[in-house]
Amino acid sequence: MDEMIKQRLVGAVVLALLAAILLPWLFGDPRDPRDSIQASFAGSPVPQPTPEPRPEPTLEPARQSAAAPTIAPRRPARTPAPTARPAPVEASTPPPATAQAADSARWVLQLVSYRQRKQADAFLERLRKDGHAAYYESVTIQGRTYYRVRLKLTDTRAGALRLKKKLEKTYRLQAQLLASR
View 1 (spheres, one colour):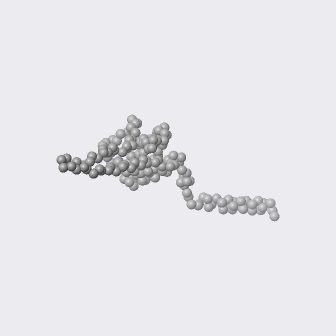
View 2 (cartoon, helix red, strand yellow; view 1 turned 135 degrees about the vertical axis):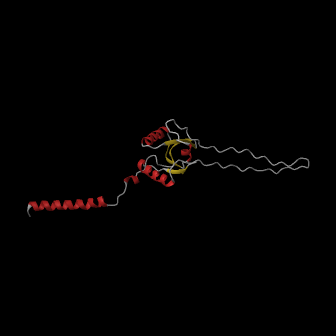
View 3 (spheres, rainbow, N blue to C red; view 1 turned 30 degrees about the vertical axis):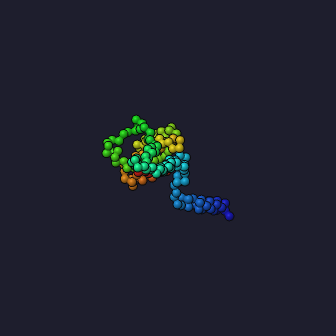
């Protein structure tokens, strides 16, 4: 066989093999590789405080005598359960423009929770550079302080869900959409 024909046959076989490998890869099912990546801060959820069971008050039977009037036993005073208080808002967070804007906020998007304030501040700065009015709340749960980075939304639920999906994809996290208090 002629040397030139051998080279052409080998070249044709190599091109056919490359096409057999690359064409399915190029035109196969497109999957976003970010779907399989988990961010390091999107690990286990922050534990929520559980209310402590309160003992039921027991009533003693009233002692009745002919001379003394009957008085109902006195109930012990209830103390309100401890609640998590939000961290003071920093001066760099812009206040709502009007009272109407504050009242119309219907959704809170909790993006992440950090154990260290430094990490929460760094993420807040990143969000603000991207044009989001984010803030954080500090909460103490079982003796540990967590800093929850959040966004207050004035959009409809559908709009809030669209923003949630966009932010989850952009920052690779799992956010929670909560009803505003």
